[in-house]
Amino acid sequence: MAIRALQGWTSEQKHVVAATFLGWSLDAFDFFLLVFVLKDIAAEFKTDIASVSFTILITLAMRPVGAFLFGRAADRWGRRPTLIVDVLLYSILEFLSGFAPNLTALIILRALYGVAMGGEWGVGASLAMESIPAHARGFVSGLLQSGYPAGYFIASIVYGVLFQYIGWRGMFMVGVVPALLILYIRRNVPESPSFERGRTAPKADTMTLLRSHWRLGIYAVILMTAFNFFSHGTQDLYPTFLQVQRKLSPHEVSLIAVIYNIGAICGGILFGSLSERYGRRRCIIAASILSLLAIPPWAFANSIIVLAIGAFFMQFMVQGAWGIIPVHLNELSPATARGTFPGFVYQLGNLLASVNAPLQAAIAAQLGGRYSIALTAVAAVVAVVIVVLTLYGTEAKGVDFVKAAVAGGSDGQPEQAGSMV
Image (cartoon, rainbow, N blue to C red; front, side, top):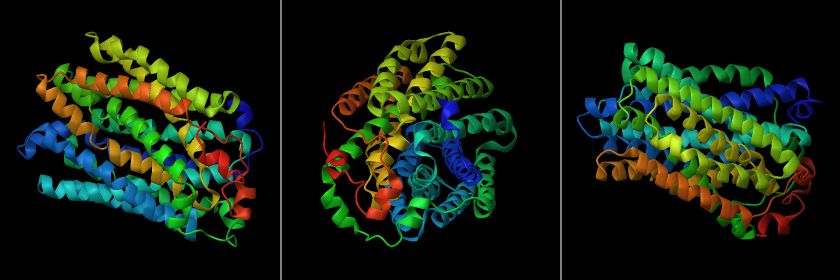
């Protein structure tokens, strides 16, 4: 499947996928640096972990703002220049986070970072999906989404190797590195062919699009809320669970994080590729159901080896389901808003799920530090919710992006894309 997906690519298409993968990986790297140092920030600012976890909430809550602003910019001025500006902004704001004098300042910086982070996924995904051969969409979708755990993977290595020398502030300063990606994008990445071909097509304003596709929009936001609880509910406080409840050292936490992010990368690519053969919805449902089997070793094992195995399979399935989302949302999207729609509904879901970290931290605090219960409650519930929502959803696998862009419509099948089946 993956081998066939790689056939017939041009050099420019390879550069597009490489750049968008790196853009999301480095964005996730910047975000996940924070989850490893919640305890240390709390200690320096003389507060508790639940209070510091609000920085995660505010980052996620501000991402829809960035998705909308950068998405509309991408639909109006192009994917490529918008992506360049976005990468520059999130790199600078990550660097500045390392100089925060107090928790309030850090919260403000993380809110601004959330705006920049919110813009990257939708713009990058639309640029990639509109540039590659149609038969490669499932594989590339999984590859792009695996950039998220790849960023987490890099962050876990940086934490394990550098934290003891540079502290939490230095961790944020390392986050300026993604700015170098701009040089690669400027030199090697062309504009989306669908955007170029559709420049002269009539553009609908935002309110018109919302009115025309309101059912699809509401469904997609609800689905992405569940998906964001699925990912953040199994990732954001897992290092804290290992540190606080399991009393593991930074080196051990880093090692387990490396292992489960390898699982996440493999799961995203595998299920994304399988979705090209078996369909988007079937593969999402399969991965979500299988994630339930990983809960006992992931949250309740006493052995560090069993914890690592459970974490590997949990993230294999969580990101396996997620690996289908980039292509699924782009195929469902109205053609004239493909820069905006996928990222905006994704980040609105993030907004609604942004309470996850404080919620899980509060549950754990009420239970005497038992993060395992808080993690399990979220993971089990949202896995079932995703199965139900996906079962009653729809898909538009194989839609022609360029033809739709020239027509200026919603891929020529608004009834299919906007209905529930």
